Length: 361
Image 1: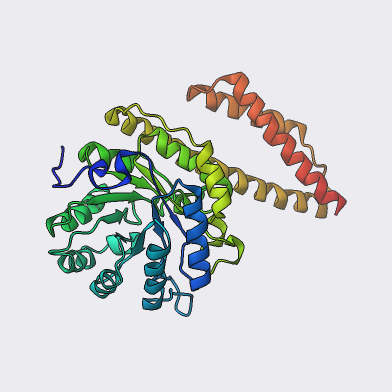
Image 2: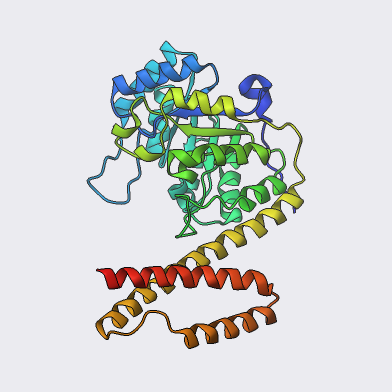
């Protein structure tokens, strides 16, 4: 089912028709010096259109750094006057909208924690009535495309036509290389339902660490997403928030230079199904790794028990029975015998090594 949103195409109001749209800046505006220095270095790259910085930071625990508030909006105002960059910040309540508009912020975004609550989204939507400003809506924490779409619809119905979605991943897979599982099938489904809706991908919050940023960013472009929001800080290791996922402006420029932009449009029905399969594989791989870890934990306990009771590590009869039973079980489930033998032998070899270490301790 296709949903109609009354929105303007991205190329008509931003980025002068060029895609992808690059948005970058620090997770948080910490000091005036840090904010302005980061903005100047990002502008010098000649690749980024919009400077982002968090002013109000929704934190899980109290007494954490929760942003500098209104004073940081003055810094963004200075960024606008000293650079060619547009500015963007997160808003979570009508008061935030009021202050951001007062200081001339060019673009707003609604964060994942806010999107989960339709009441909060509606309050923000009501505060935007009669205002002509671009608004970006991040996906909710859980992979619910209808909840995401509902937030976009609420903002659109308030009269906002310059509308974008931001994909920042989902708090779903607990055992994953990513901070937030990408689950690409969800933004693909949103794009399928609303083909003209621009979707920006936030590799920083998906990856959670620098070494995964490029792969996530390239995947986003391969899937025909409209742009990237990447966090950048002049001294990432000293950042007050999300230090591990931020890049220096220099590293940001180098990464953007390596990205390959593919111009062909995707078949979203095909991509949606493909990403469903891939997401399921990711989940099963997580289960497989967890199961192996649990198995080896028990193996370590067995090794300790054998050592304490002076029992030989290698039990030939036991191993022969395991091979016969596991291979037979695997064959009934369509697993190639030779492949399964190799896997079992590798696991057994690791088990012997781990138990041997127990005897040397």
